[in-house]
Length: 236
View (cartoon, rainbow, N blue to C red):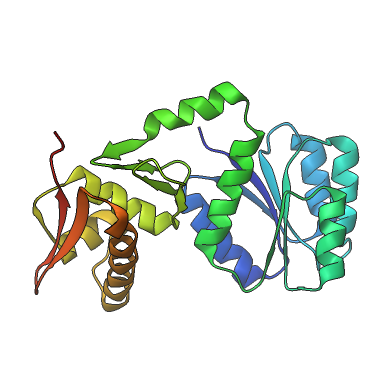
């Protein structure tokens, strides 16, 4: 099931990029350009939204005013402030209003996705949270909690991953102990094989390799000029 987001952002370039990325991450996004339109939309569809992303500096009605009106209609709906402001008083005001989180521009889009997923999960009933763990991927002495974007190693404290790191690790877990060509990974995961995605892949691999140093059974090796091998030792 797709989670539904009411997204309020008056910068059209940023709004388009965020909307398209969230939709690519399997969210359903209703985007409004100002506070009044967002409030009217919420009144007509308030039972549909799982979370609100609200920019503070909006025309006609600022984000704080919008949040106050929405809370009067539904005190339990989670919301996150998205803003160019980074002043402590604004952050405190937003949190006092009941915001579940607060992220300043410029921001990493994968970080925004992670925060959204964590907020939605916290608001879910316990039985639904438990159901999400059914999608965990155990291999060797690690567990990828793909729905939560987290990695556990030897039962230790979960480590937060970006969306693309989690996608990459999931792909590697599905293809252990064989050579995976770089172009194969790029095309299968992200649909393109270009220079910039290739450099990003190297960064993700380096990060995962560093995290997996604490594992006794799982590691990643380079195959020069070809790709990578995701090594998984059999445990007794």
